[in-house]
Image (cartoon, rainbow, N blue to C red; front, side, top):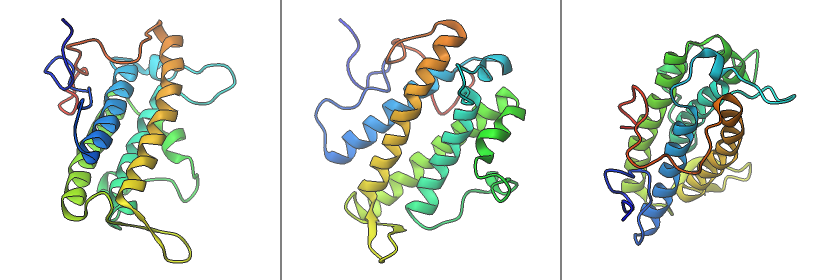
Amino acid sequence: MAPGPGSAETLWEPPLAGGEAEHLLGALDRMRWTFRYKVDALDAEGLGTRVGASALTLGRLLKHLAAVEDSYSTEKLTGAPLPAVWDDNGWDEDEDWELTSADADAPATLYATYDGAVARSRAAVAAVISERGLGGEAHISMPDGRHASVRRVLFDLLEEYGRHTGHADLLREAVDGRVGEDPPPGWRATGSATFS
């Protein structure tokens, strides 16, 4: 019999029957685990592999999704500034800085940046949901002053993962042929406390 949802062998499985927050966070975490599996254990060459005319690489996606995690869990949800890890950025000169600068980052730096952002985001999101619930008001607002709900911000984050995990599927297959929807039972990310 295969391990069930949320077992020690399949930590990424969402609950079979839970509340709305548990299902939303479970789906988001499943995408995080799947993305991390797709990018795991690669050297600079593997993280820099491109497909066709696209400039996307797994390394660029790692740094981009790290920035997305931190932005959604701070600026968009609470209005807090980005964590200090982003202080020396180049977004003023290059709006895609997190993508283009990733090319010069060592694999260990990219993995640590992503894993750290996910850990911070999980904690921040849990605190916001505990305080406001999914229907509570997020900081981000429309020009007319209407605020998004916490639920909307988290669904937007889930959508971002859906798009980029699909990209990661194609890129990883081009690197070494790794395919599949979920990590295999018992898989843990190489050198990661966040995904272990």
